Amino acid sequence: MHSVVALGADSPMESAQPNRESRRRGAVALVDCNNFYVSCERRFRPDLRKKPVVVLSNNDGIIISRSNEAKSLGVKMGSPLFKVEDLIQKHKVVVISSNYALYFDMCDRVREVLAQFAGIEKYSIDECFLDLSHKKPGELLDYGRAIKRRVEDWTGISVTVGISETKCLSKLANKIGKKSKRAKGVLNLYQSPHLEKALAITDVGDLWGVGEAYQNMLHAAGIHTALDFTKAEEHWVRKKMTVVGARIQMELKGVPCLPLEWVAPPKKQLGIAQGFSLLVESREEMLEAAFFKGSEEAAKAHKEKLAIKEMNVWIQTNPFSDGPQYSDLLPIVFPVATQDTSELIRAVEWAVERLYKPGFGYKRIGVWATKVDPENCVQGHIWVRPDMEKRPKLLKIMDRINDERGRGTLRMASVGINQRWLTKFEKQSPHYTTRWSDIPKASIG
Image (cartoon, rainbow, N blue to C red; front, top):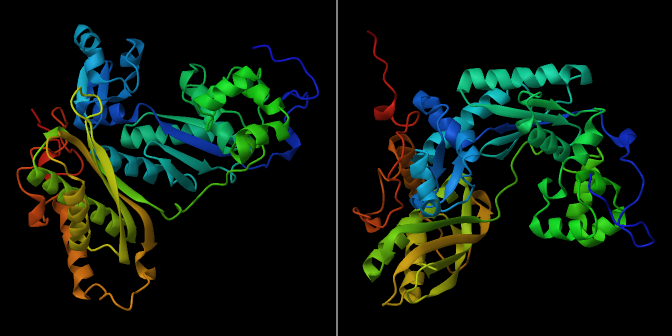
C-alpha cells in the first residue's frame, strides 16, 4: 500500500476503521454488461468472437467500445480512429459503426431479465443497480451467479455482478470482479473479511464519483487508496470535496447515502447535437439541418411527456481544422411551453437565420431545451393562443408510426430528403432486432 502523509493536527488521515456496525443488512448489486456495444455485435456475429473488435462513435470518429482482445493490443478508449489506423491495420481489428437501435433494444432485454430477480435502478445503458435486501447474506453469492447465468443464457450478453452494502461498494466490487479470474464474473463483498483488502488495492481515482481533479488533490494529500480515503477525517473530506465526497466516504464505510431510485427523476433538460459528416457551408443546408434537429428535439419532448419553455440553439465550425473559426449561441423563450414540432422548428429557423454567417464551414449544430415543464402542467398565457386540440393527437400518431416503421418515415417537408450532411455510419451492422428486413435468417441443410 502507498505511504501516507505524517499525522498531525491538520492531517486528513485518522486511524478509525470503517464502522461495520452502521451498515444496513440489505445488499446492493451492480450488474454491468461487459464491453456492451461489442457484446451486442457479437451476439449476432459469432465469427467476431475471440477477434479484436472496436465500435465507433457518431460519424465513425472515436472508439467507444473495445473487446478484450482489442484492449490487449493497446487500443485506448476514446482514441480517434485515424490515430490508431496503423494498429488497426496491423492486427486486423474489426471496426464497426455504432448501432444504437440494436444497443438500446438489447439493453431493454437485459433489464427485463434482471427485473425477474429484484427491483432495479436503471443507471446507464449497460449498468443496473439491484436491491438484494430480500436475500440472506449466505445466499448472495449463489444468487449473483444465477443472475449472471440467466442474463447470459437468455440474451447472450456477458455481465459482471458486484455485491456489497452500498452503491459505491458494489461499484468497487464490480470493478475488481471484472479483473479477477477467481471471481468468474461475480464478486460478493457483503460483510466480507476481504473488503479491507479490496479497498487497499483500489486507487482513489478509480472510485465512483472521483474525477481526475479530486484524484490529484487526494494524492497530493497522501491519500492514494480507497482505504486511505475511508480513514480521512470527515470534516476535511467535506471541506475539500463538498457533500459529494462526504457521501462517497460514508458509502465506502458501509453507510448507504445514495438510495436506489426505482423511478427515474423527471428530466430538467433535453439536448441534442448534430455533428455533420461533411462541412456545411450554405444557408439552405444549415437550415435543413436545423429543421431536422428541431424535429428530433420535439420527438424527445413527446417521448418524455415534456413541453419546452426555454431553448438554446448553437452552431459551430470544426475546432480541429486550420480554417476560420466561429461559434455562437442564441437563447429562445416561448410565451407558453410547447412540444409542437412546427413551433419548435420555426423557433430553430429564427435562431439559425440570425446565427448563420457566410464564409464558414460548419461542423455542428445543437438544440438544447434548458427549461421544460410536464406536458400536463403547462401554464397558459392570456395573449397567446394555446395549441389546437387536434394538434397533439396528430403528433402522437406521427411518433407512433415512426416508432413502428423507423425514424423519418413521417416528417416535416422542411427537413429535406437528401440530407447529405447526416451523421455517417459507414460500417453499421443490420438492425437485427428492430427491423423486419434485418432479422437473421436460418437455413437448414
